[in-house]
Length: 264
Ligand code: ADP
Image (cartoon, rainbow, N blue to C red; front, side, top):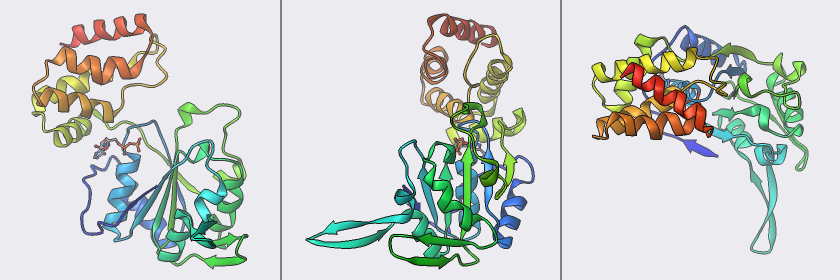
């Protein structure tokens, strides 16, 4: 879990559509928000940006298949011979009136949904069974979750009873002009050279024949741009930041290098 408290330091985020207004309204109305979209398209940055803009601390939890309700709520721990209750990140966020961001929530264990249900409907209550406490979430608490529909399999699907408690919006990679702006700003690479990278990304994302699990992310483009801005030759930079991260398959890697040769 990471906690950020730099309330006055608003991280850079380039809006794509009306997501900032949606977030702000959801926050003001006490409604939870679900962000759907591929990895590396700006979901986390968006939540960090909005939390800072709204002046709320943010508790980010990267969910995984072993993450249980107790990891979010808290547990009794043995400290110097005495057992002591220690709040988990969700409980802390509720107590403090913070934003709790559950990244890749779909990965978490099933018992997490049981905890989220009373917190995400009009009750806005966090029930801590182990201590017998019931916390009423304050108006400045907000729950935000994300997941990547592209990774879904039959075993990992969000139940309608959970999905229908959240407002939802889909994120995707930004349009070329916005992505050029984002990549140039984040990496320090000049706009001209950034344009080529974004053009390459457009080709890769448009290729269904390569059988890639997912297209190249904005995050990887920023890596590529940072290496190039640091003086690395383009072919090497793209090998490390695009070809290798996207596939382990030798023929797919060859096809990606061919594509790079066409663009450059
Ligand atoms: P996700 O949470 O969707 O996996 P991130 O929010 O971590 O992705 O985005 C990866 C990186 O891409 C961020 O660290 C940021 O540098 C950059 N990024 C992507 N989209 C934007 C955007 N719209 N504005 C600013 N930075 C962005």
